[in-house]
Image (cartoon, rainbow, N blue to C red; front, side):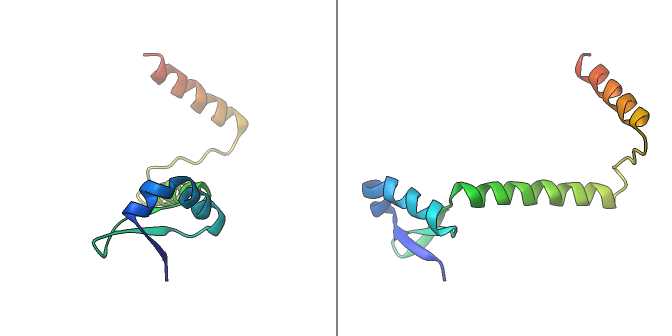
Length: 89
């Protein structure tokens, strides 16, 4: 079960809540009127969620054939040169 905290307590003790979120490595669910309204997460959890999202997107692109196989350094350099041209349009 998640740790919960009231919205009012966050207003009063936001530093303590953020420290606890970073220390516990677990989300802290914010409650208002006995209903969950959000969550506070530590930076480590946020970074992990972002990494998972990028990996899921990469896997989805791979499955739909949107990726390119690069086997040699020359292919990699040519691909970078192509990207530079697109950026400098």
